[in-house]
Length: 116
Image 1 (cartoon, rainbow, N blue to C red):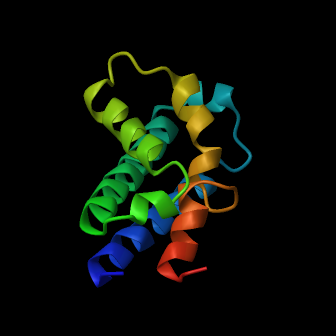
Image 2: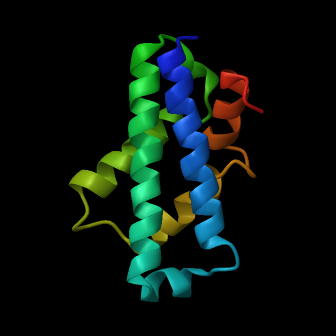
C-alpha cells in the first residue's frame, strides 16, 4: 500500500473518531435541533468520503477491501452537491456505520492500513 493511501486511511480514522465523539449520547432530535452538531458531523463525513475517494483512486483494489467504500464516497457527494435535498435522518443514519466502533469503512480501513 502506498504511503499516501495510508495517510488517507488515517484521515478516515480520525474523522470517524471525531464523529463518534460528536454523536456520543446524542439522538436524532439533538441532531435536528443543533446546527453546530450537524455542521461538525457533515464536515467529518465529507472528509471520510473524500479521503476514501482519493485512497481508492490511488490504490487499485483497495475499494474491494473496505466495507461500503463506494457508499461512503456517495454520501460525501450528496452532502456536497445535494445539500438542499438531504434529510437529517439520512446523515444521522449514516453516522454509526462511519465510526470505527462499528462495522463499516472506519473499521475496515484500519485493518487495511495496518492501524488496528
